[in-house]
Image (cartoon, rainbow, N blue to C red; front, side, top):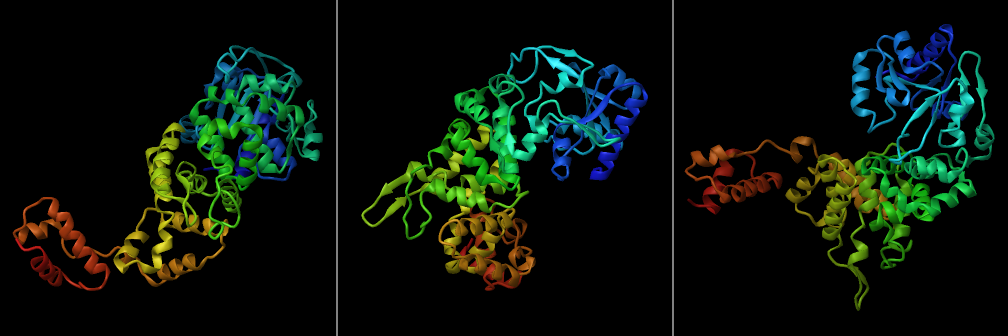
Length: 459
């Protein structure tokens, strides 16, 4: 993948080349915003009055992946970068292998709530930026002389810390309902306020987010969780009414009391927000979703017992709810399994000091155990703040080399067959007993393992 300087240099070269061919061309959008904020842009986009066919003539290795909307991709390094971008850009708009080049245009109606029914090319950059989402994303930059063109008041909103739509908020959101989630994400990421009219429009339209594909909603939620400002993002989702629409199961955490001796911080929603506040920037999507959903089973299992508030079976209920949420949001099977594992195992840390060595080592074998341990740390810091069990696990892990946690098996199924045993359900019980003895140090070689099998599982 190309590094940051390479992509910026390539984008600047594209602008220079288009200018040399008699066209207008500027950097546009998020990269301009980030450069003005002295942040590293995630990607670089170019806007030009050259049509897609003209861009493709000037850059022979350009791919017209969105030519019907005036968009083509120019590779930064080689064709493989573009081929990868064609298959991944829908999931990740931060691909650094290409520069997106879009023709100045004005858009018609958006019947599908995402794409314009028709586009009209224009020579006027001022007309082009009017179709974009927010003022801070509507700036143009001439990278050859570092001149900023601002037709929408974006620089003032950057200075004031405001997220404001370009033009009428209702119209911008009608064009693409996902912009409501993007407004929340940008406000959280930059610590900005959503301008009142923009905020009110979102408050009036939250149910329309269901017109957006679940994959696109998922991607925005994951970005909110992993950009380092998850608590503010979810607080804003709540305030705008979007949380109830996209994650009603999380919205139901509000007001669900918890036993104060374990959760002095407050209800399940407060606890979850505190946990999200601790999520590090660039946390993995699976850890982030596990953190968000670890207590999702508490609202439906809440009851007040004679001794204290209880959530009987909330882990099992939470796992099923998590799997359903992940299916609804179109997470991959692999990610869904990991997120569900995080929810399923987050309470097991309470027992680590009493676990047999074999049980503890098997616990450590959980896929991506480091995410389980980090979720436990965050969970503790968002409640009682007692990290003794976290430190106990870290010490045990430091003391155990990998070959102790996952040693080479002393016996296999073939060995059992050679000993005269017939394949069947008993095989699993026998091999588990041998493995437990090995993990606990009672069995050190295959001969001892065979002796155990003959004694406890006679043919």
